[in-house]
Amino acid sequence: MKIKILSEEKLETLSTKENLEVIEKYIKDNPTNEWLKDVFKVDEPFTLSKVDMEDFEMDMSAERPEDTDFENAKRLFEALKHLSESTACDTRLWAGLTFDKFYSYMQYRYNLSTNNKYFKNKWLFQGQSRKADLFRQGISMLWWYVYLTYDDSLENPYELTEFCFKHKDFLISIYSRTYSGSKNVRLALIQALRDYERDGGSIEKKEIYNGIVKYVSFLGGAYLVDVFSREELYEKFYDELIRLETNLNNKTTSRFSLSD
Image (cartoon, rainbow, N blue to C red; front, side, top):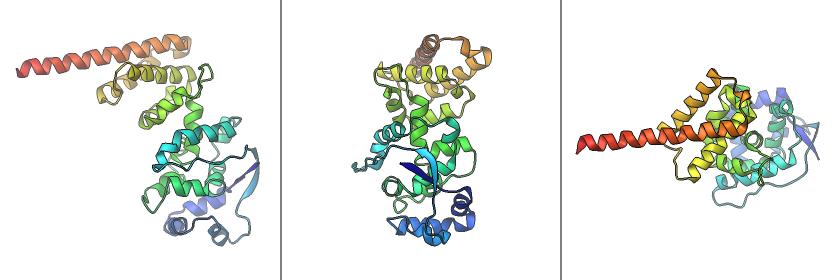
């Protein structure tokens, strides 16, 4: 199937400040997207693109919609694995999928009746930065999460993706850093974090979280990180996580000793 997109002009119409309240109400009140014809005063609000997608349906079976994110991200990526980065940066594509093919899914996953904060963050693009928007919007973020974590060198190429869906805030933090553009750095870091957690560590501790982020930034500033193999980067990151944990444990022990 060819993906239907929303033109830049129509997307701007939906996103303008004076229209936000009206559009939000349309979405809340309508289980189908027929209202778009009234808003744009046309019989066909969408434009047929040249982008092919294998037809599929999103999983909408879970009581907690967020529990379907990983599965739906895999389904979307498999259907659109061929996308180039430039095409995947086109908000018209994701807006078209949001308001056409996956309108029912968006109603299920980001129901505005339960949380109206979803409207600007998930249904639309906030217009802050293209990079941040793509990583937050309800459909585009599913594809980009997989694209940045998919590793075909592993027996299960979605292994790191699944880990990141359990730690979305951390992946967003990585994505905002300049070093996220290096696939070796990105995947080595995620794999080190995954293995560290498997071995009993906690990346939820802010000292560990902040420490490893600072370390990777330092490494990127002190060296040309591309000269390191992925295996070398993995060892450096994992060793640093252990060092951070040891320091944290020593500080905790020291505080207890002083209070005795």
